[in-house]
Length: 296
Image 1: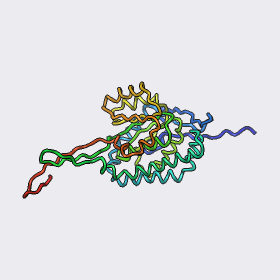
Image 2: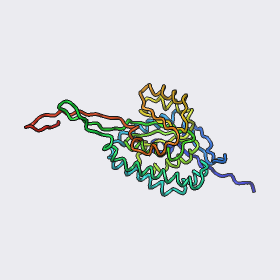
Image 3: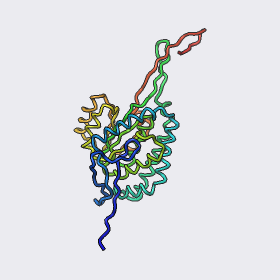
Image 4: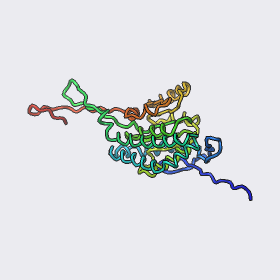
């Protein structure tokens, strides 16, 4: 008898709450740590990126209009679903990233805890970052933080599962939507995580996960006029890449965040939420009525 050929899964792109094949028809091989083929993965094109931005744009306003408490509920639901699939994700990290069993289990547990952490901040970050400002006139002056809109993210190959989850959770916690190019080294894990998002009541388009090549999509993401902020994740800072992103991002004044090194502990913070928010200040005139101040 001839040797049986294993039927490998083809992982699709996650765009607009749906699992879609790339419009280009291209794919790449997802390899395990030993170089053996683990799966097939769709290779996102510039058109796929544009489709993801359109989906993120449609979803963002509705996501921001939800209550902070409801957004926290949905992030907590993600944690519940990831916890229930802990053994599966730990096994994938062992195969794809070459982590030991202990490290892979720890990585999944930390990612789950990170989702719970940012779920808890959803209805609290406003209290930390908003303020009532003293002014030398007959006005009340308030500053609150609001989402920037669509956040683009490029994850280099060496970025781990924990870092990817922290970036996603901190960005959507405050009402942003996101288009993320997953780390190529853990593309199977990333697209499996898209399945967790899909079954966690997250509205379609809030998070869009692409698989592919950073050098192919980086310029298109950095130069896209509808992406309002961009995060670039890598263990080492590449000055040429950074300069290219800064040049293209200047076209629409994107806010840029460069997350370098082992930043998981540093970014497990409410200040990671603030990185993708902008401050809105309101002035309210005061009218003196019978000796008492009234705002209108």
